[in-house]
Length: 203
Image 1 (cartoon, one colour):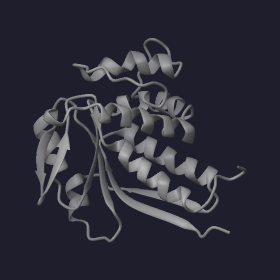
Image 2 (cartoon, one colour; image 1 turned 90 degrees about the vertical axis):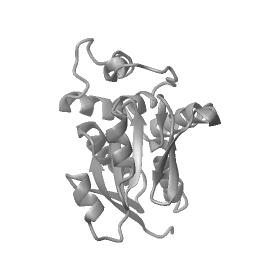
Image 3 (cartoon, one colour; image 1 turned 120 degrees about the vertical axis):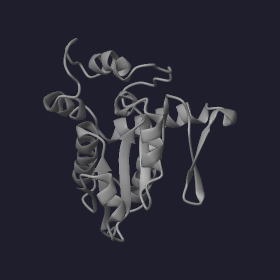
Image 4 (tube, one colour; image 1 turned 135 degrees about the horizontal axis):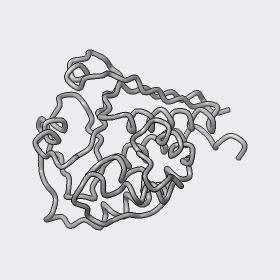
């Protein structure tokens, strides 16, 4: 019988979408892998997270939001792994249902596609709690794997000369103009670790 697998993170989230998504991911792991648990403990302020003394990995989940100075400041936060989407988290949600590689100008430009792909009304506010729940209820592990695949294809098509460099400590951190993200790397690595502990329940 596979050994128990437990992974914990201390997190800062930019918004409600991110927080609810990570909680949903933890729920999916619990439902599909009886021997695996993932915990995300929230810290409300990024500055508090960076100063927290703990051996548990610290992550910050945030958007680019067309605010380069704020974005780069968050990336540089000491002792915290930056997990980002550009322009915003809507892109990551959309990739669960379709590949979307078009560059956009405004933060709201994904919303019509989100409403269409997740069966919401034409004027529904996708940031509203009830609608976030409706979206997440349509995302399973296979959808997350699809989002990872779509994100990898988008990022692999980027040109080396187009990357933007940030110095984080002694290490460089790179990102690109939208669409751009590294959130898929986090979930791809974590799912790989979980899979090593055994097959999904009932498979």
